[in-house]
Length: 123
Image (cartoon, rainbow, N blue to C red; front, top):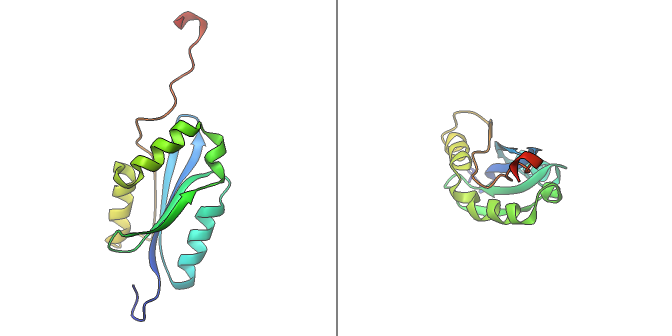
């Protein structure tokens, strides 16, 4: 929280890049910029899941994004379940909390990506 209870948020979004790779984007923002950052993550066309945390890593709000429709519902469920403990998410949150940078982005390390589709030679 800021001096007078203002917002100081870390906004995290999992963005669909391609079938076998998603990206974790994070941004630390304060005041009105925090609201803009949250709304940007929430309304982005490829956001699969977004969340807002304070500087003590308390979850404030979050939910599915418009990009949920781009991936299988079972994968969305697993992403949501593992979100808070995912190594990429926690790494970006730590960096934002320490103030190392105002924004960060990394490919999501995730064991739930869809398996490559089998070709005729695999049958």
